[in-house]
Image (cartoon, rainbow, N blue to C red; front, side, top):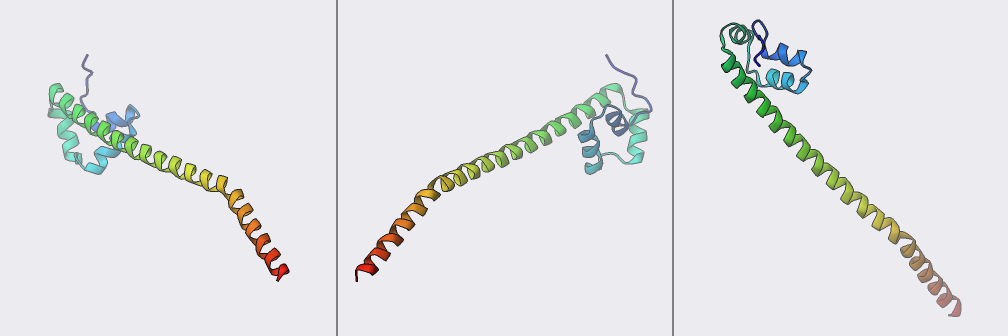
Length: 113
């Protein structure tokens, strides 16, 4: 059912409902000046308000999807980096052993000369 929205602005309603992203989006985009708030609260029909809220919701959903995609990319990069580091560390003792053996061979050769 429709609630009575008279006197409320999109930002105040979003803030009351705890939709911080919506508040941020509305402020950042500058969709509503104080004048527009007043106009919106007093003259828009419920249908118009519903359309505006749906548009804001769609925009927020799109922003959230972008953020989630970015977060997933960051996680994938971190995982790849971790895997790389683990491979390097796993190979380190072998490389060290190889270098030590090489050093030993060179020292033995020098002693024989």
